[in-house]
Length: 91
Image 1 (spheres, rainbow, N blue to C red):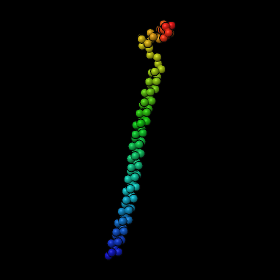
Image 2 (cartoon, rainbow, N blue to C red):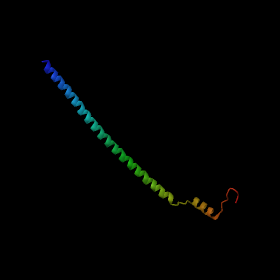
Image 3 (cartoon, one colour):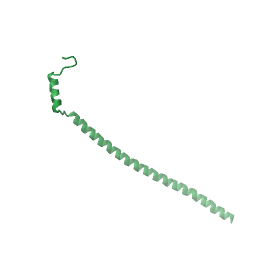
Image 4 (tube, one colour):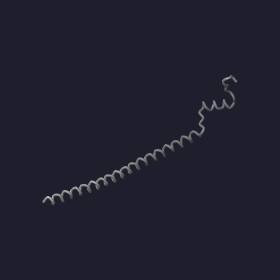
């Protein structure tokens, strides 16, 4: 009888060790897959944001290259070209 109880006990211990290893491996695999999915999703969002910011930057750079003269700056530009402004020495 004690031999039967010890065999059942050892079988339960072996099954417990096997189950622990199996579920630990499954949890690791699931955690790794979830982390990869989340990382890919966030990286995709970040790359889209970078592309959008680069497009905005390119648009701003193109806009900055185009001369836009308002009436006040146009007059100042003409006066500067004509030499009508004096420098700090009164010339």
